[in-house]
Length: 446
Image (tube, rainbow, N blue to C red; front, side):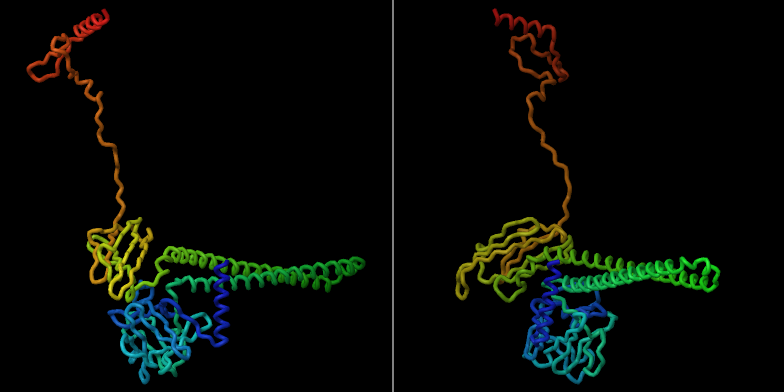
């Protein structure tokens, strides 16, 4: 409930800011997803395009919305720095691409026009062209920018999803809308119940009044056919009212039940998003990437024996003796004590890299750790837990050889075992041994 109130307060604050003319701040990294097709804008080595709906998200899908003058923004790719532009006097995919170099011109600035459902129309400040996409992801020309005189439709509306806050924002808005619909249905149901009670009381009063007025002349009116017809008409009207009220109640109850089921589904989906956001909170709490001291990235790669996870840390001026790695469960803690050098200040940097168990178990490969060209490379290899049985090893015990009859005796003892020539175990004369033993004991006692 507190999360919902916080979201409502944030939306009210943003709406008030829009009415006062204040621009909306877009902090963090965003994915730009089409409302109709679900395709996301990506700038990668394959080109500038809108990928298939439901595909995995990579760093090439992340965009930063940097504010400019007149409430405009430039849309910059988080991975390669490409800026989206739409040139004038061109249509669809012509003159519509991303460039990573050169100065910022007017055709690289975009106006984000909010829609009623929380989505945005993205319009170029110079050419007036609007981003749009088609539903067929395999068509090479299924993504472009329409001319300003083209009518607006839902395929030109885009969700701006803050990946540093997760997709839970859109789910929270849907949950809030569903709860508002459920509250409206509940109010209408209460109004219907009140109307039904009012009609019931009115009919009860009518029946009571009719009974009091009809009682003295009941014998006379009983013979009147008109009374029969009137009574029949009243009966039919009552049956219709009761049936209509029952159907109305059933319909409202069905709608309320459907709204309740939908709200529970949204709450479950929101809880799943919230738990995933909590487990990843430590990973997104710091700015990642390269271009500054101790920036880092975590990359996965498929190898012959499974999955390899690389933690790459930018640490200029650091030597091998400055690095300390402490192994943790499913991760490690990195401590770097960089000493002062020309142009660099002495500093200590510490960071824990712990991977969620739901992503698998990872083993640190100490022999693959390296420091070169100002980057520290830490390699983890995914592995599967293997069950095994553990038993105690064999222990030496003095009584283990008591039953083999190999004992040591004095040379003159009559109990000395007789050894045969076939390496058989010695045969001890039990009676003689007993007598000799008794004699020896008796001699000692005497």
